[in-house]
Amino acid sequence: MKTMQLPPYAPTLIESTRAIGYTLEAAIADIIDNSISALASCVDIFFFPIGDSYIATLDDGCGMNISDLDNAMRYGSKNPNEKRAPNDLGRFGLGMKTASLSQCRTLTVVTKQGECMEARRWDIDHIIDAQDWSLLVLDSEDEFDSIPRIDELRKYKSGTLVVWQNLDRLKVGEIDFSRSMGRKMDDVRSHLSLVFHRYINGETGIKRVQINMNTTPIEPADPFLAKRNTKVMSDEVLNIEGSRVVICSHILPHVSNLSAEEINALGGKDGLRKRQGFYVYRNKRLLIWGTWFRMIPQAELSKLARVQVDIPNELDNLWTLDIKKSTAMPPEEVRNNLGSVIERLAKRSEYTSVFRGKKETSDSIIHIWQRFKGRQGGSYYSINRDHPIVEILSDISPSIKRGVENLLKTIESGLPLSSLYLDLNSDKPVENDTDTTIQEVETLLRYLLDQMPTVETKNELLERLSVAEPFVNYPQLIKQYCTGGNANA
Image 1: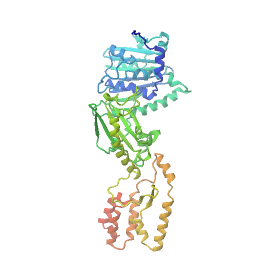
Image 2: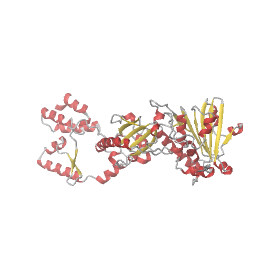
Image 3: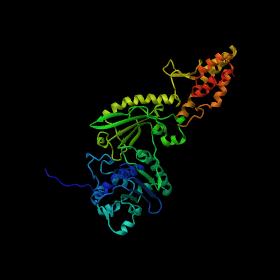
Image 4: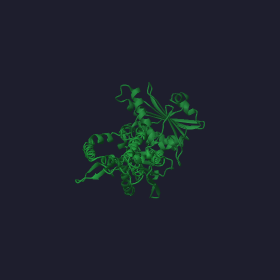
């Protein structure tokens, strides 16, 4: 049997790989992966939309020698099945090239180690003219000086500068490129703040990285609100082929207890509901989020649930990681273990949603509203007739008792359920779902105490109110009236 060499036709292949499907934010994230793998402590992103527009990414990492640079510019520079260093965020040896050229026609990479500086360039128009994989080697002072942001790299002892020019894909269909570029870079900022939030924050086991965009630092967007202590279960560790997969579960506070800034950081324009689910990290870099991997549907009552899954890069083949590092599917062994986690977490999320984020201290609390199972499998809500406020009003006289009962039934039958459902789905707080002020509660408390004829009945009432809404949220007020002599007032 004979063999023959049949290399790919350079102009066709390089144009075809531009259509892999990178978004601008995913492409820039791919470049930052290389900076993190190079142990950079600072990454600067510069974009210039006017005239000879460009996007440049500069890091202060270890840089590359000539051999490493040439290999980095090669398509398929590393076998995806080779074992990588623990901090390596790459995989296929294609990311920098395919990501960059999906957005531009000219990719220049300059790297520095000590006094040595080398530059290489892929220019698609030059490849078309040459009809070959013709990599440009920049070696004159004038060629170096023409590279945007080269002076910033010269200040570093070591580092790498990646420059995109001739941004043809970004200009397609744009009337005002400068304005549209600003909007797109805002999306990039939001994307990077989430994808690299653990690196920006700094965390045990990884090097902290500061990422700037046009000199403005990118702030981390923590999807779990870790500072609010939303962790609800102990970490679960799975051993897969000798590697550790760590699972950590979170339930966010109810939306009514979140500030506008927190809601925006957690969901943004997509809303909290679309961001529920698994957050899969590879070497603590976020790969994919906002999915339950078809194990359960995204539902309103589970929208506060978030599951952090940490995987090492040696399990890439099991998670079917794609070139863009934007999709991954857990292996069966992991899916089986995640099922029990989802079931427990969904219940906790439903509990938080149903009780509107208010913490219950025990099952003995006397609630104003009660939920019951209906005859047809549904549910209905009723005002608690055993609540002290209802009882006191009903005991004034038979006619008032009938009037109170009619009023309660009217309120129950007139619940605006459709409007409530729409408001709760809007991810905006329902403004009357907030704690009553202590002044309002005290006024109500004094009125109820005035209905009691003796000190003994006042104290009995205070004991009941101490476990009834809304008084259960103000134990200091109950204590004041029990011990401060005000029960006799």
